[in-house]
Each structure stands twice: as C-alpha cells, then as structure tokens.
Length: 145
Image 1 (cartoon, rainbow, N blue to C red):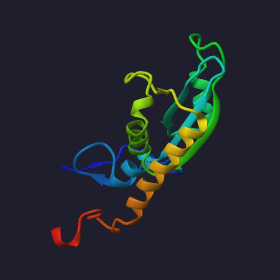
Image 2 (image 1 turned 180 degrees about the vertical axis):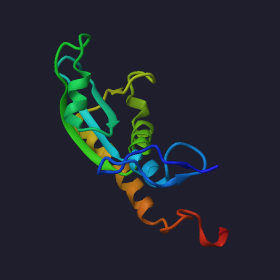
Image 3 (image 1 turned 45 degrees about the vertical axis):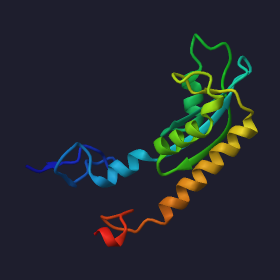
Image 4 (image 1 turned 30 degrees about the vertical axis):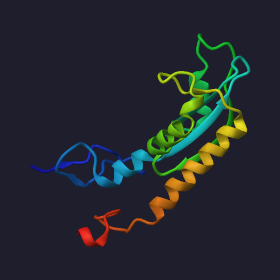
C-alpha cells in the first residue's frame, strides 16, 4: 500500500510523493541529512565542542547556553555539507584520541586543529560524493547493476 510522504515542501505544502516504506520520500530523506558541522569554544572550558545541526549554527549555540553552562558558546567555524551526520562521525573518528568522553562532543584540541580535521574529512567526503553516479543506483559500480 502506498502512502504520501509526511514531509512538507519548501513552500510549506504537503509533499505529494508516494512512499512504500517509511515516512519520507527519497527527496526529503536526502534533504534531512543536510546541515553544518560546527566548532564552538567556551571561555569556561579548555575544550572545543564539535557537533552538527540542521539549524542555524548561532541558534544552536544559543540552545547550548543553559543553566549548567556558565558562559555562552562562541561559534568558531562551521561548514555546510549534504550529509552532516556522516561528516560529524568522520571528524569524531579522526579526533578520537583527543575526545574527552565518548558520551560527549568535547575535544582536547585547538580550534585550528579542529578546523583542519573538519576541512580534511569533509573534503574527503565531498570528493567521494561527487564521484558517485547520478540516478537510482548512486555509488554502485556499473558492473554490479
């Protein structure tokens, strides 16, 4: 049984695409992955925070300023990508030796060191994505189709 995509279009109307399994069509699933990987510092900490958001990065910094945080986070750097979750995961692996805790997004690395890691991992990711073929079989070698 076919159902309609539950996402809204950019115009704010319900998407008209059909879905077989799941709640969103392929267009909205891909759009849902987009976002920014950011680096933030805080004058109250000796660490940098690296994370991702699909929202405005400054809005994310404001969200992090809670009663448990004595001062506002400063957005040091952000970079937009088509797959923020994958990009963030790649950066976390690259900086795993500097991670303060596996349960937190804080790293004992300089802002410039974090920027280098983000730029390197996103460049590798984007280069890989640009080499994929366009169409329903993206990323599958033509010999396997």
